[in-house]
Length: 164
Image (cartoon, rainbow, N blue to C red):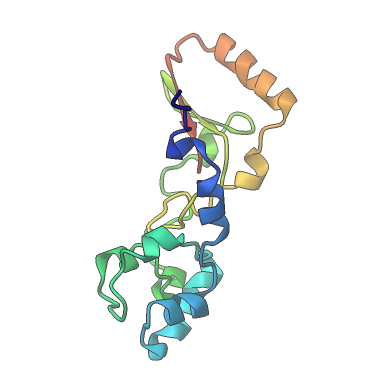
């Protein structure tokens, strides 16, 4: 008899991969053989938004190439800390659409349910990097409040589950 094996996405391998993510600019520079003169800018950008890159993603980046498009999505740069006219920490205006913890109701018939603030990779273009995920963690009681909210808003016909 042939035994059934779980598909790879049913295993805990993804948790091991995430726990081994690079979170330190010095480690990223060393791993990818990047020019050390660019490291200070990376350290400054890392202070504004932490670095997080899993190994399988790193394996696809060309070593020594600051212009590699995959690297540019994850490498912290000093410009991230610049104050630029017209740029705001909440570019989508979501904070005013946060009626209760873990719930964004920005559009009439649609809500976003924030289940986790943890992403597998911290993209430098993330528009929710300043979102207060700590204030939007849902307790069991708050899940019940979300259910009540949805019952009180019959116009909502779509609930989007967000992981960060």
